[in-house]
Image 1 (cartoon, one colour):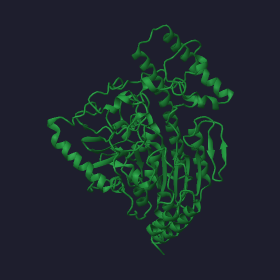
Image 2 (cartoon, helix red, strand yellow):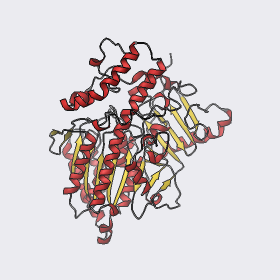
Image 3 (cartoon, helix red, strand yellow):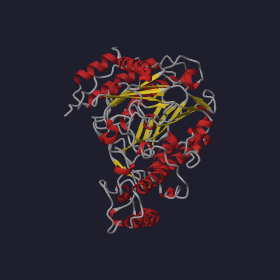
Image 4 (cartoon, helix red, strand yellow):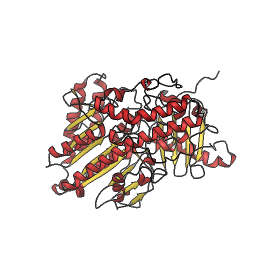
Length: 548
C-alpha cells in the first residue's frame, strides 16, 4: 500500500476542484491506513483514551473572560468558563496564526498555517478535504466524532460520524442548520441555546462503546452581537469601563491604520449593529453608515419582536431625542455607540457562558467529567473598543490573542497558568497525543501535552503571523513575528515595518522601528521573521503598491 503522501499526490494530480468522488476515495484509503496505524494501540491504551469536548466560540476576546482578569472581569463575569480555569489550565499567551474565522478553523483541524492548509481567507474556495485532518484521524482511530454549530469552511465536514452545521455565519434567532442529507431545517429559539441542545442530544445517543471527540461550535459573540431576549438588559445598569485607546489617533504607526474601516465611530451600522432601526427614527437623520438592515430582527416571530421592541424602543427614543436636540458631542456619540455595542456583545457572551455551564453539568450528571478533556477556545480575539475598533484581523494583541483553557482531570493541575507561547497550529497535535496517536510529519504545530503536564521542556520563543484577506475592513495583508517581549509587523504593500516593545508599550501605540536604541532588537526580530518564514515555507510576499 502506498503512503498517504503518495495517495495525496495522485488525488491532487487528478482532482479538478469539482470531483468529489476522488476526495471520498482519498478519505476511504486514508481511513484504512490510519486504521492500520491505530491497531498498534493496546486494549488498555484504547480503554484509557479520554473523551474530548471542544467548546469553541467566535470572536471571544480574552478581556471578556473573567478568568483572564482585565477591566471587564467584575462587570461581566463568566463563572462557568472560569470553572474550567479553576479546575484546569489557563494559557496566558495563546495566539492565532491568522485572525479571521475560516482560516483559524482550518488551522485547528490541520495543524498547519493557512498557506499550507490552503484556507488563507474567508473569500477562498473552501476547505480542501483531501488533506489530512484531525477529525479523520480520530474517527479512524475509533473515536465517535461530531461537530455541531458554526463550521464556516464551505465544504461539508469530513471525518465526523455526525454533523449539523450553520450555513455560513449562521443567525442568532430561529437559525437554520444544514443536515447531513444536505437539507436545511429551521429551529425556533436562540442559536447558542439550540447549538447546546443539539450537542447534549448527540451525547445522549452517541456510541458509548467508543470515546468521543465532540466540537460544539457557537456563532456567538460574532457580529451582529444579538443577545438572547433574556439578557437584553443584563448590562444596562452597570458601568462598562472605557478602554484607554478608544480615541486612538493612529499616529506613530503604519499609515494603513488610519484608513481602516472597523471603527466604532465611523463604521458600526445604526440598524445592523446598534439596533436603531430606520422605522424608529421618524425625521431624525443619522450620519452614515447604515448599509445592512436588520436581518436578525426580520427572522423573529411576533412575540420575539415585541420583547425586542420593549427593550430597545424607549432607549432608542431617548437617544434620538438627545441627538436631534444637539445635546451630544461627537465624543458623546462614540461613547453611546461603544456602550450599546458592549451591552450587546457581553449579552451574547453571557449566553455562551451559561451554555458552557449546561455542558459541564451534563458531564457531571452522567459520570463523564473525570475522563473528558474539556477545552474552551475561540477562533481569535476581538476589539472591544481598543484603538477605537470592533472586529479583528490586525496582528495587534487584542485580535491575535485567543482564549485557551483546558480541563484535563488528573493531568492538568487545577488553577494552573501556562505562560509559554502557544498557537492554534498546536491544537491538532495536542488532541492526537491525548488520544495516543502519532503526529504526522506535515503538521507544523507542537503538542501542548508536555505543557499541560507542567513539564520543563524546551519550547518556542517566537510565533509567526500572516493575514491574507484582500481589503476587507480596509485591513492590509501583513505578516510578523511575536516574541515574549516584542512584536515586529511587516506591511509589504506600503513597505512599512512596525516594532513594539510589549512590556513598555502594551497598548502598541508607538512603533520603535526607527528608534536608534532599538536597532539590535529590530535586527534580531527581522532575522527571526525570515527564519520562521523559511521554517514554515511561507509563500512570496505581496508586491509593494506603486506610489503616485
